[in-house]
Image (cartoon, rainbow, N blue to C red):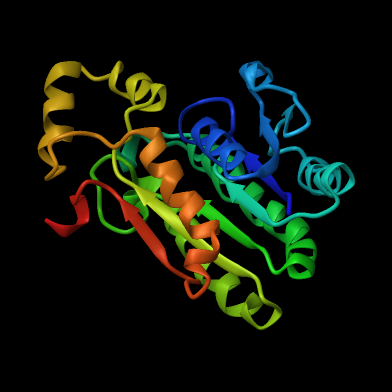
Length: 243
């Protein structure tokens, strides 16, 4: 049986790896990103790349209905789109704060709201990309950490509310992941090499996770093998929160 999915933030990093893993697992995927690079994903009937802004009012509903029209069903929503900001509290402006919530939280809720009735039809699931920053205190990430804490609680709330209708809702919480996302943030540090050394020292396995490692966790949470799991935040962090 062919399964249908919607993945946001699909152009690179974790999102791109998720799309590739889902394709291998037999899913047909609507892959969304505001970046034109999403069009590099093969438009082959299995993957439908769409350049779209997740913050636009029409995007969530249009993406869900496009998946149903194209694939006949929706089995999975992966809310992955997000922006990162490393900035101390006193240097975080109202625009910084509002912008992060507008990108990292509101779309996740609106995509979930659009998808849930369709997921109830298929007894499908949602997997959100949270972060260890939403679970523990991390210096200089106050606004970003708050958005990821909101994703954690969104996951738990929807899991409890929609379990009676057969929909599972879980999240992954990555630590540092070896993507351009991290490289861009670190480039602004006075000493990027020292910053990288601190990051690695905070992960007991001595390295960052790869996008594919996080993607595999997301695909696991969508798979029948995890049928008894809902409301869970699965850390993929190389032991960071276990320290």
